[in-house]
Length: 356
Ligand code: ADP
Ligand code: MG
Image (cartoon, rainbow, N blue to C red; front, side, top):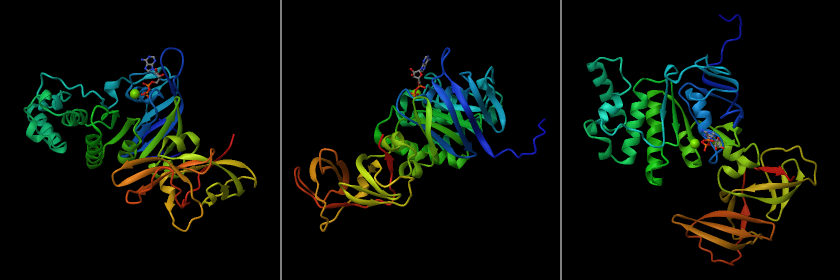
């Protein structure tokens, strides 16, 4: 019983001040985030930053050192108290599909349904195979399926016991780029249709953005920013997030006022005010889509690199040794290496950090 009068927030999952690791130390420190019912969250970060470690703690395979994990407002992990994985109603999907090779697809999906009678089990498996578009392969064996199909079987198997939350650890890493993209959208649609919440672990930012509602950017075991993809891209909280998310680089500049910076690319004005004194030295984030071609511009940097990518071409421009930036142009705007091209900055979102 609680005698608090405060209504609990309607979170499905709450992670408060979580630290955990292996042996004595913690590789994950002071992690905080919360996921709403039906949302797909993401842990995004470079290899080794602690994504899988957080997932293991959520699943109940790893005890926690500080903080608390709550699922549907009940505590499932506290220091010294870890609810067993099988009691959490959390499903998992891993990178290697881990299907049982000697069981058919239908048997694989039904594996966790021990309590249901034959008829109920059959019905559920049939339904789930339909959801993942594999109803015609029920009697096949895993080795007869493609990687993408196998991963959908793994998802159906994880969904069968009707978990409250699904954890997906780099589920598409073994698949080629095209299939990855399609499957991540498929999986999003399946989870949304069923109203199942999920946490996806990935190091692939495209995948995170395409599939997830909220994304945590992690570095060295800590969350740098937990936000919607749009804000991570346009309002990065710090230099690491700015560099890790999206393309682009920094050019040096000097603040003229709270929303205005002078640089070799001219005067850049943005939509937010920084608490800078005029004259403060800053680094301005320039994304390839912040640069437009403008025949009348007096700014004419030199092309130093050119990467053709079909419908568009990525150029690297140099104004001086200190100021280089990239620009993405439709590929019919074709410039050669060494050419001076008239461009200007067209950025609504001024992202800059004080130079340290
Ligand atoms: P990610 O999933 O982001 O690539 P992990 O969570 O797997 O990263 O690993 C985070 C850190 O914890 C790494 O430095 C890794 O070497 C360490 N680590 C992972 N698993 C173990 C383990 N079983 N025992 C000891 N250290 C581990
Ligand atoms: Mg991992």
